[in-house]
Amino acid sequence: MTIDSISFSVFTKPWKAATVWELGKFVSDLGFDGIEFPLRDGYQLEPAKPDQLPQLVQQFADHGLKIFSVASEPTESVFAGCAEAGIPMIRTMPVIKHEQGYLASEQLAREQIDKLLPLCEKYGVKIGCQQHYGNNVIDSMGLLHLLEAYNADHVGAIWDTAHDALAGQQPEFGLDIVWSHLCMVNFKNAYYKLMSGPEAESAEWKRYFTSGRQGLASWPRAAAYLQKRNYSGVICLSAEYTNEADVDRLIKEDIAYAKSLFA
Image (cartoon, rainbow, N blue to C red; front, side, top):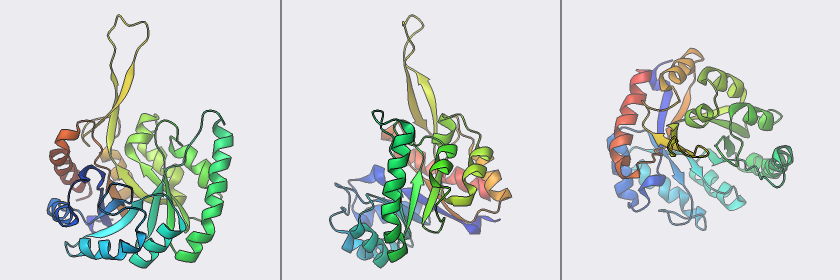
């Protein structure tokens, strides 16, 4: 595998106030191949207007960029808009609700996926499910348990370096677990930061999202494993940093670092 077999994407959530032209130029100048677009209220294009996705794709194409995925609610209108625009995937994160319990919530998530399968087949657009800390499926084993019965052509696993690391998983194991359904890889990093002092009655921790070289997740190990298994696809840098004021500097450093790992 060479770097030519990898497409580097960035989730453009941090740049909500930029125009499409400004965003396209910024992302292109950083050296990305394309983006994941937050098709959500308040962004450059909102989910009420998915019919405008082809125009958005063309606007980014003018900067040499593709839209590899959207993060949005998987309604039929979003499926239809993605299909018309040639966007292959909608990213989602299965929710777990405390009052229902994990297994009951997982079953509800399957029922929701079951309802989406006809749309996946009708429009040729994939659902990508990502693990996430908190009230979600949090790790790679949870993703496999949820998705293993589905056709990987329609429902895929998006493996996230940071969230699997926060759950205590090693990157080689996490990627191997979801490999049968792997459709995209997210590169970001995080660690647990102690917020309380030694005198506290109970410790208080927070998750701190940081640059790719820091944190619990090993980007070099993830990259080496992907190369070993000849991964050919999208790596999306999530551009999620607790230090939001420095996002432009951090994402510039992180795309250079990520590319160096596959050079």
